[in-house]
Image (tube, rainbow, N blue to C red; front, side):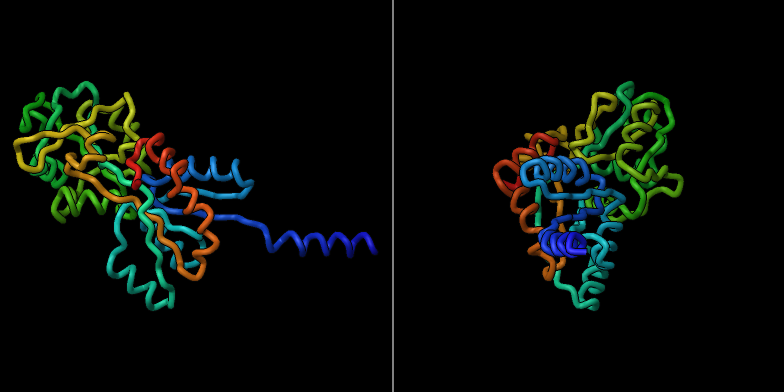
Length: 269
């Protein structure tokens, strides 16, 4: 009996100091958060769980109280902010990195540059063949993230100028699925975060003025010459901010920001 009481006392003493963080949301932020969590966990022995699913999914989870941090590749919408206000929660917003949103095609595609207007035409269905933009006589197969994705929202707002995607667009549940599909489909085109760019796909030089075409890279993102740059966010409930502070402080430290660059994104500092 004495041993049992002693064991219970030990559990009660240890439990309050137990640290477990949960991050949920953006697939764009996912590889960065996973690497940061891995290094943070090794340094501190603290547990961090990172789950994707899309920016909207993460924000909804934060509202429901099922995640500590919502990862997002877009700014929070007005109606989402209203829901947080109505729930009595006060939001804390932290920009942890920057990203160049890369437009990608199959490596066999000879097209290497597109204007914003041409991208709008492709993703809204007005341009359907690569020969219309200087390529081969080949059907364009556009891929997109699903609507819960912050990348989907950002691309629609900043590249399509809020015009609707073509109804026949192939919506993918994760960024990795876009990479795989574009690498295997000759007429494909899609868009992904810079950290997802691999040798199996080709990045497109993009122009918003029809004159200067810029390739997405860490350098062009850092000097802001690439026209599709976006911040990557952590959202937290202010009441629970203290719990997340050690992890956030690490990400914003010199070491944490070096990891940002290693993963393929642009440091805030």
